Length: 134
Image 1 (cartoon, rainbow, N blue to C red):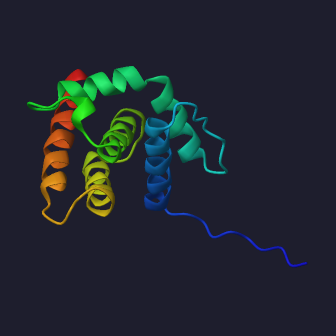
Image 2: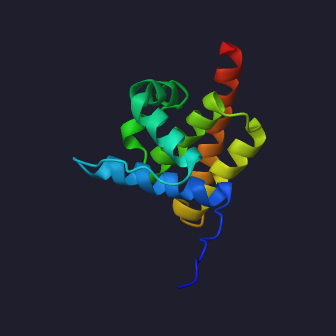
């Protein structure tokens, strides 16, 4: 039997996987994360779950006339991942925001770009807020 390697996933693909898992976490009462072969996925998921309240408070502090619970599960997942990356990675802020907006466009936007525009404002607020705290 031939040993077949699975293709290496891009960081964008890993982000999509994280968004799916965070979405599942939000809709399930008894969801458990399973370790994956991807360090980035494991680290992101465990850090987000361990710091969920703090991450959610940070997001809520940077929403304008909105509450976190009003956001879709997908948008919450995207913003939680962005907070993780802004706080715990070396990835440049511009790339984090761009990747988050790509995820919003792919999973949340309904063709009118309102979700993308909304998330862009929240992400810019988050990045500015976190830079001030450094």
